[in-house]
Structure formats: structure tokens, C-alpha cells
Image (cartoon, rainbow, N blue to C red):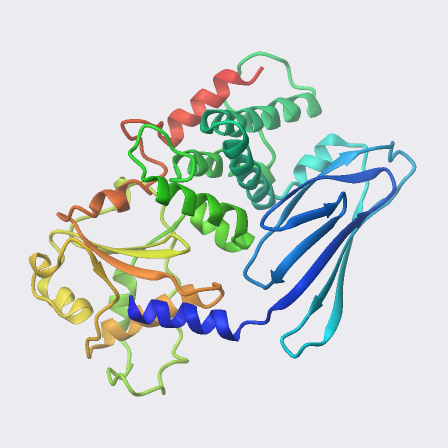
Length: 378
């Protein structure tokens, strides 16, 4: 935990930052910014006041139609940021994006960005939870999913009524999965005991994390590290902790697993990247030689219930796992805290509850959720 704090504090002190910033959002005539989402003060309908601005924050906005865009071929959005840098210089940065206009609803849906949709819905849900209640926010997730499928049926001129399967464009194929991840996330879940502090922290992350990190926070990445161990034992990597010669040695690409217990087995070690936290799950029957090489222990019984940080072990296996974790953390604003969880520990529930695809006492499995959505689509 000390290493994690040191890394976060270093990032906080050394990252680029702007002070006394104001940001104005402009868009093509006929469109208007309806609502902003994130941490800021609203000074006018299109102007935000930001006490500080940095690369580790995310913002969202909703756009409303004011006039018809029938005659327009493209629309433009522009964000202009006026800020003071760390040297005291007043600077301005401008980003502009132009997008084509179409009258074809199928074209719009085939071009949809699922991750951007999830990023905006998560921020809207936090605001709705605060302004109204958690139940309304959860209903909004489900209604948004149903609306997408209903709109696509209309766009494709499909007959109304229930069909054997949900039909959606490839661009939106993962929307229900990510929505289920939001419904089961500590920020919005119900039926599972959640400390208020944990829920508030999760909601704050939903509002502020950059989009790529938000997606891991909503739907974690699960890996089986057997291939890393095999790679370490069959390569010429040095086990000297102070030797940097092997840092450029390529690591094997691990397949990303579905978040389901059916992919777990008791003889393997699994790694789950939740964005802000990396959990290493140690199966009950992992061979002693693997435990010794990776964690420096001979039995899982030597692990406590709450163990943080990967131990320093002079072995190829430990080195390769550390390099893999470094690769996962490379693009993150802050290095994720590493937690080691044994199969029989009380912390196991923390790992199991992030297996989004599985059914729990208070929530549906992914398959059941799809059936629920299908039943609601007209």
C-alpha cells in the first residue's frame, strides 16, 4: 500500500495541471448544450468554471435539438479551455470535432459508441441518484437499454412483438453487458450490503474517471496467468530484481475471460483489473512450486484475509507478473492497488461479486438480464 500511495502522490505532484480555468463548449446552430456532468461550477449555459483541470478527469454533456438540421451536412463541437499553467502563464487550448449529419436512423445506430454511451449514462445516473433516488437511476439504465432495442426495430422496420432474440447493431452488442455491470456496481447496486462511504466513492469515480478507466471500473478485465508462468519458465528472463535488461522482453497476450465463475479453477491464479484495484485470486489447489515462485509461500494458508501488494520474490515468475501489472497500469492516471485473495478468505466475496455475468442472490445473470430486456422490447 505504501508503494501505491507513493505512486499516486508522485503522479499528483508531477502531472500537467491548469489552474483558474474556464471552459466554454460551442456547437453548431440548431444544437445546444443541455446538461453538463462532472466536477465543476456552471457559470452560464455554455461556460464551466474549473478550479483546476488535469488529464485524469472526465466530463460529459447532453445535447438538445433547437432547430432542424435537415440542410446541414456536418455539425461541429468546440471546447475552448482558458487556464493558468504551473509556470504562471495564461494559456488557451481548443479542441474541435466535426461529425456528419444523416437522416438515416440505422446509420446513427451503427455508428454509436457504446463506451461513450455508458460513460454518459453513468454520470447521469449519479446525478439522478442524488436528485431523486437510487431506484430511479437503476430504472433509467434499463429503460435506456429497452429504448435502444425498440428504436433499432423501428429503424429496421421489424415487426412489433416479441421475437426469439434481441436484435441490435454490432456497435451496440455489448450495451446490455455494460448496463448489467453498472446495475451490479457498488455505486448503484441494491440487495447487497454496501457501506455509504464505498458507494459515495464509487459514484465520485463514475463522475470523474477518464472513459477508458471508467470502462474497466464498470466491467473489469479477468485474466488467467498460467501463460505468464509458462512464459517465465521457458524464457531466458533474468530473475535479478535490479537487472533492467529484460524489461523489453515481450509478454504473451493473455486472453480476456468472461466475468463468470465457470472460467475459474482451483489450480490456477487469476488476475482481475478493476481499474482502481487489481485483485489476484489464488485457487485452493495451486501447486506449491507456483506459489513459491510467484508469492514466496508454500501454501495458501500462509496468506491472510487482506493482503495488499505483490511480494518481492527473486524468481522469473514473480518478475513477469510484476511486468504484466506494470503494463496494465501504464495508461492509468494512478497505479491500481494490488490485493491478493486466497480461495478461502473472507475477502473472496469482494472478488466474486465482480463476476458480472453470474447470478447472485439479489441480481440476474447476464443471460437472465437479456431475457428480461427481450420481454420488455415491444
